[in-house]
Image 1 (tube, one colour):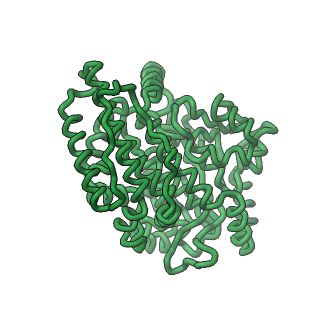
Image 2 (tube, rainbow, N blue to C red):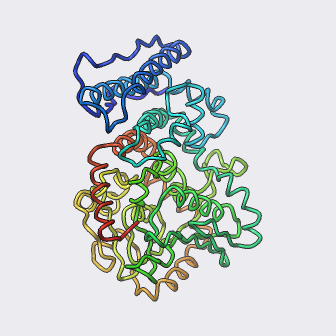
Length: 462
């Protein structure tokens, strides 16, 4: 088993006096004994934590005590997993014979190792309060997944498990193959000849993404990949109903900031599922046990075209980075304003520099530079720029070109050269920790509050 490096640093939310710091247990190296030690400390710390007043009512001394308890628990989890990630993962997955998705793995760990990660009930309770009032237990999920992904065997098993089609898609497969259409709520998929058109449908908020959109998009992508009559996929945003953009199509406005402010964006159900689920399926296809080739790996990949109307902001721009051909309307633009929200822009830090160069990537991520589709700089972000009324024809021509058996092998080799499984796995290991901490950082909460207040005064994106 490859262990996580001892140098991994965990966040200390607030400085605590030395006397209030709590030491992690002295683990022995025996998984069962160490699990008992961990559970005992976490239970004792949680009892003290629960005895404190709500965050808004705490005195400075109580805030310090809460921070010390939280830090001690995180350090204990980290040290336990540094020793036992392989054992924990093998136990939860029956020796890596049982594929578990991120939510299933997290909740299985919560049941088998009390306190290691939050229970479903604890996560559900957090979903009832604003982001500013959340308990921060998602950081414990971040620590867990950071270790699972860092260890090669468990990380690769999780990546493959997340490439399997969802249960929802499998349940809808027969009907979709019969009718060629599925309306999933926040996404639709329509088969037209050998092309599957997946459309993001969140028009009230500029096709921004939230947990429900990620769920529906992954199902739509799965259905397109499962259908043998589909050779090429197209991803596009629907026509908007937002007052400022009514009647226009848009590729997407990134994360739904209203839902993030309200605490309705999940770390596991959005941040991890999005990156390990539908986005990676767009790149690599599905992992189907019956069709899996031990030499070639997942064999369900198909080429994908992105039709970028109006704008691809934030998460929408991240998705465009993994598509095989991007066709943009001449009045569209791309942007990755990560610092506006204060969170990590998915895997853009891994992929963007390869396409546009490090300097341009820094300008987009750190300074929010917008790239107009009809500017020379956009040639690194899209393949073709046409008049808005010509997007449909350009998409049809590109789909016809990509409907060629030789595309699949060349695409697979191209993907391998662009981003190895190991590079992605190691990146996501660090991302899991960084993003979980960012979501609960004071500066992120403050930025969300300012954005929320501004939008109440002048409504715009959801």
